[in-house]
Image 1 (cartoon, one colour):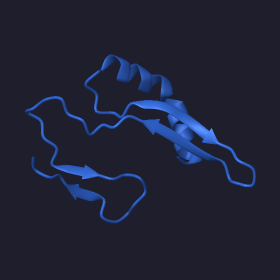
Image 2 (image 1 turned 90 degrees about the vertical axis):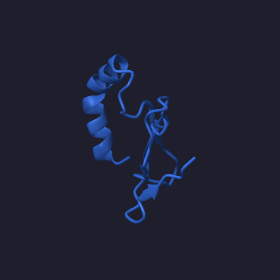
Image 3 (image 1 turned 60 degrees about the horizontal axis):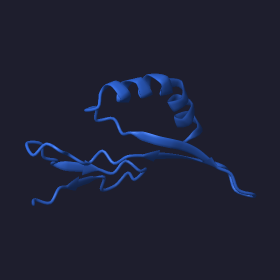
Image 4 (image 1 turned 180 degrees about the horizontal axis):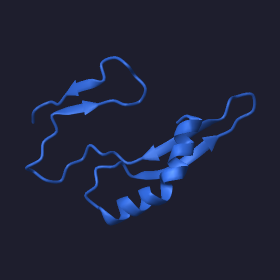
Length: 83
């Protein structure tokens, strides 16, 4: 998480919490924590801990694609395996 991402999350935090609290079926990822790791001789890094949004509890819903948004610019789309 960049400093800009962290600043944006801090700015929208109250509205985000209100939204995910009131809308249990929201597809926004649930954020469980934001942490800054500080170690000697290393640039501090911001981490965000989120729940997995891939789960579906409705048998009528099926996922067709999964996108890896962790920074990769290649092969980000993955076709789902059929059960």
